Length: 328
View 1 (cartoon, helix red, strand yellow):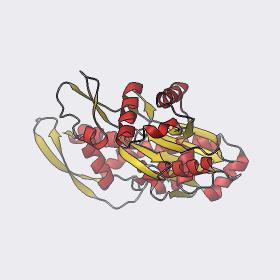
View 2 (spheres, helix red, strand yellow):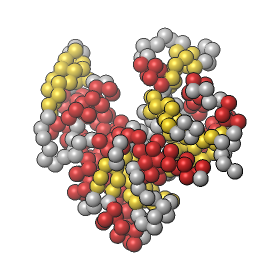
View 3 (cartoon, one colour):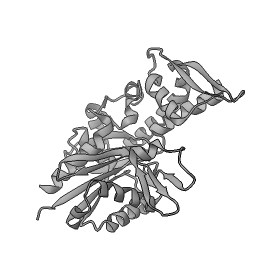
């Protein structure tokens, strides 16, 4: 019997994506953020609107990010967040015969898995599926994970990096690390404080990373004007920073992820390792767009490395492919 509706939910540290099998599209893609009135316990805003008022709310508002490092940090807030999404999308009625598919890190703990199951039960989901982010990302990147060959994928998300080798449709070996896209932002922020005596916010650090962040061995030298607060005088200040200066902060993080990938490769059978000489590594997730990261991994790991088309949406694309396979 065909399942009537499958709702795919990718609860990310930065953004949450909701996929509907009925419309065969992503119907929600906004920040994983919820504003709750502490007095009435009502959800006031979610997504973009909640993140926009962060730090600017009255005392009775609580702005919560219910997902941290890819795992659920606040189950109640997470349920309220999803409930509001489904209300706004008018999906409540579909849950009578609907199933829910969650994406989760490959090394998802029993506690996090149980939290996802409880949330799905509260929505009276007909069936509950929890799939590895690495597998969904590989599917979304266009890889044939059901073939009897090795597929190595590294999904660098905002709060967690998920690495896995897949063969015959399942995970053979996997690793997860909190060294992720947000960690690169934090490294830039700390560098500016320690070396430049300039305090900048998380969004400014992300902007600097996107503009001039690089781990390329011989990349083009780029400059950006960074504005913030001088930590010595406490007055507003700005200064020019080069991409070469930031490498000392970013390369150790890229090196750590490369070591994690090496650990995954070292734990698989030699026959599958041999496949990687040809198949190489697929990079997905927003963090894979860091300048020079692809070349750095290719040189460090001595295997071909490619970035998936539209890496930021690889997991949601893989979710739609996985759902289509379930509905066959």
